[in-house]
Amino acid sequence: MATVVETDVLIVGSGPAGASAALALSTYGVPNIVVTRYAHLADTPRAHITNQRTMEVLRDLGVEQEVVARATPQHLMGNTTFCTSLAGEELGRVRSWGNDPLVQAAHELASPTRMCDMPQHLMEPVLVDAAVARGTRLRFENEYLSHTQDADGVTATVRDRLRGDTYEIRAKYLIGADGGRSRVAADAGLPMSGRMGVAGSVNIVFEADLSAYTAHRPSTLYWVLAPGATVGGIGAGLVRCVRPWNEWLIVWGYDVDAGAPDLTTEYAESVVRRLIGDDDVPVTVKSSSAWTVNEMYAQTYANGRVFCAGDAVHRHPPSNGLGSNTSIQDAYNLAWKLKLVLDGTAHPRLLDSYTAERAPIGRQVVTRANRSIRETAPVFEALDGLSPQTPDQLWANIAARKDATEAAEKQRARLREAIAFKVYEFNAHGVDLNQRYPAEGSAAIVPDGTPDPGFTRDPELHHQPTTRPGARLPHAWITRGTRTLSTLDTVGRGRFTLLTGIGGENWVRAASAQDIPVATVVIGPGQEYEDPYGDWARLSEIPDAGALLVRPDGFVAFRHAFAAPDAGELLADALRRILGHA
Ligand code: FDA
Image 1 (cartoon, rainbow, N blue to C red):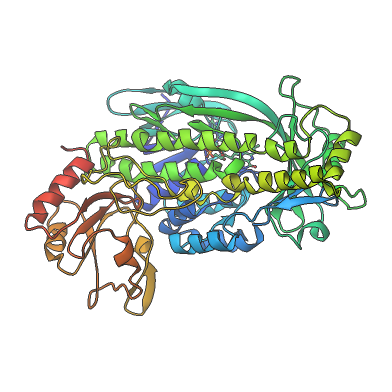
Image 2: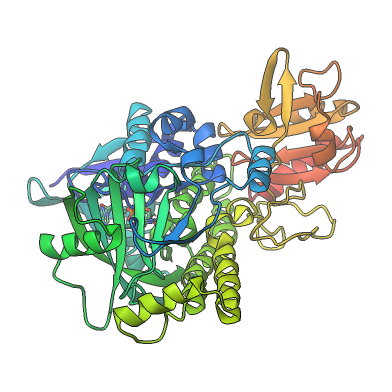
């Protein structure tokens, strides 16, 4: 009889979702196996924008510095340029990805981390190397085929593509991180909304020294408005920097009803030439692939012992750079819950909070990313470039904005406005950081009876911290002796943390009396942690003697605004509820 391999968690896929699930689980000491279909990790750049929340996750998982060392830094990301080709006319720019001075300040105030550009073929090895070093067993060329589940676990059938035979892996839980065509999600019967194949796109990876056209306006993205650029795709032609300024990826649309073009080198070179606009630049095409813009999300992320994460449950275009970010954040939300259920600390119903918390985020991300594509149309409209026309007519329309006429002045204003509106795609700090899990929806959050503070400014553009249960713990720089650290550095590492201040002795005693480890952080003059700038006092929204209980993923789970003589009972009750025992 064939041997059955056993593990606690089987992860299908080594993309951002699977690799980070493996990394988090191994960091928490949970045995896990990753099976992945190919003999290699991502071999093209794919996702790249890495936002502050993801960097916080990576900081907690101990790989932030490695990512920073390999990524393109934030200051080289941010002049999103609209042009007729790289060598052609420039139509305008949007300061992006935290590089607008005001948004930059907001980024610095919001997080100890910086956004960066980390292409997926560089990110996956960092995640996977660290996961394997911490205990993940990784099987390349092993393809998930099917699964069955019963009351005690999941049995997956896997094909070893090298040997050509199949075998079974028995796990207590299965994570389907197998991407946008997820077989695990389909086999688990996860209900989906929306549709696939909304538009067609081609990715072309190439090498060319384009510094003459880019280094003076450093950016991750150069958007090209040229004939054919509104067909399919993501709103316009896109030249994306992979490595400044000689590795690139072009995204170019095709009519999805007509089918993908034949991806010959000649075809790829013709698109590259059209978007660069200078035939003398030497170009080496590395690869081309076709993909579709999707607008689909799962309503439920789990069925019994099977959980899905990443593109398996939210499928959307790259706009706003949310693909791998959301995938990594899904995995981080799920991993600590699995750990606590597997070691018997939590009741399995804690796992229900995964769908309750992440599915609304997935829906929001899919909607935002697709809306961002539609919001590119006004840039073309401002140039009268949407209606069918010959290339000469389009160039004439674009040239018309330079006329000394009232109509041209209006056109210039319309164009400026349309380009500026693209901040919702390129500088949407709130989209990145305002994730709040509703206490009403998730049993892993204990409501404190306070009203939802909502948002005082546009929640997509501006980050607004709060300590109301369900929100991510706000970042403030505090000190411990001579060391300056973030409040976020005091939480995480797979454990609960209680934050309090002077007068919160009852909370500290209560934390140490719990059945599970609860770290304590006391902030105030003469305490282990001090708040020299007063930032924490401004952000904590509780008096010194109150308390916040923060989950292993950095989200506030419980808040109490006062010193409490019955702190032990209050905390025990909160933990019972969060862990699914109540
Ligand atoms: P991902 O697709 O990364 O990983 C899935 C993993 O599962 C892979 O390791 C795969 O081999 C494995 N797998 C699948 N089926 C399996 C099976 N049956 N058995 C075993 N293993 C299996 N995003 C963006 O923001 N900007 C961009 O430019 C692009 N470009 C882009 C190009 C292409 C070609 C693709 C496919 C995707 C993009 N994306 C993108 C999307 C982005 O890459 C995506 O959001 C994240 O990779 C999602 O991460 P996941 O880990 O969920 O899936």
